[in-house]
Amino acid sequence: MPDDLYGAPVPEQLWERIRNEFQLPALEQVRERFSAAQENPDPIMRRLVRVFIDDDTYCPGYQFQADLSLNPIVTVLFERAMELRIPHNYFALWMMVPCPALGGSRPVDLRHAGDPSPLLAALGQLRAGLAA
Image 1 (tube, one colour):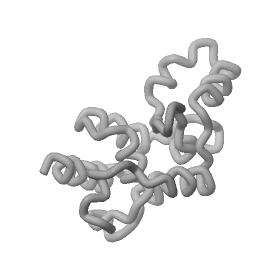
Image 2 (image 1 turned 90 degrees about the horizontal axis):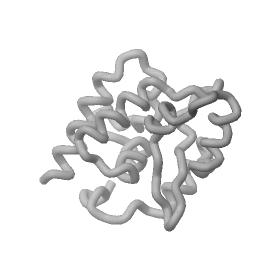
Image 3 (image 1 turned 135 degrees about the vertical axis):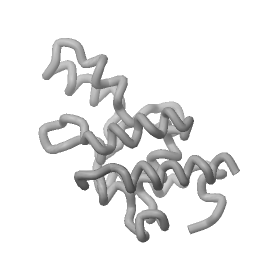
Image 4 (image 1 turned 120 degrees about the horizontal axis):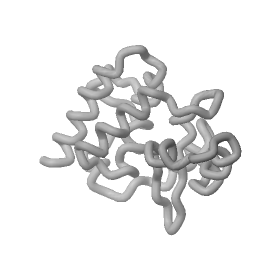
């Protein structure tokens, strides 16, 4: 993995990987789905991982569970990423690439683990790397 991975624009191939492996619906599609199921979708919409590609906004499918609720671990990670001021697109990139702090696992593959602590620690290392 290149050392400057988080210092350059996110590679276009990442969006295709997310789309092929997890889906990558547009933000408006997600809003429509939640609006059909809930009277006020705004609280859940504020918690969504969003990525910005060209002039559009998308929501990586890895944050949704089978019932379309949000995966609680991804939500916790994303909230922490926002506290650490990690840009949305770099958070999405981090989720998809092997992470040395996680023994080479991709964070996305650990999103169903019961304990988010190792993922949160690894995310903190990303922030330290971005600040360097």
